[in-house]
Image: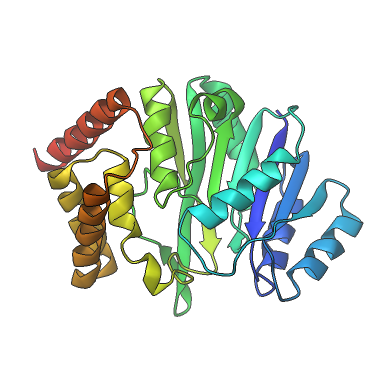
Length: 282
């Protein structure tokens, strides 16, 4: 299988060398890696160039965007810029962050999962963050979810879900839409990926309502959004997060923002979510 990778990067000089090094040391190497320099003002480009000079399958493109970090939108705009620079000769497309360290057998194990089951549409491992001297699971979601910084998509699945949505929670939307289309999500919990910059570190105060907005755009409805908000707030140990998320949901509802999924997809998503809640309760 041909693996193509797109890595959005904004001011990642502290981490990107470790990410690229972990990629060139894989037991199964990707065919193409495109790093999207998203208007960085530090030495990110110099570090990318140092790897491009040594490895022909690594290249970069420049994306001119604003410095403000808008969850979902900024990173997906950058991803799309990189994806557009690639040809169509891939079997697996990956969206990675520029602040991760992959285990050396990451692709080897996940490609095996794709090969053994042709219904696997999305696959990945789990993210771990540094806690003192140990690495612990980044528990802002469960271990069955493939997080945004480390995702692999089968080509057919990626096309059927229409690529990645420009919204916070895009890495939940993709999995829900993939399941709607009949694809399966595969998470290999033995693959521990080091996440060097914990999720949310770059988010601005202006983005505090975006999570609730995403729930609305996904057609969750108020009660499902409330439960999802409470769960995230508990994991983050922040009651204020719960309040801000609900405010974001209500603001989006009052503005009647356009949904990012169809009515039929929304019915499927709500049923899937409610079934998951019932399964945990009973």
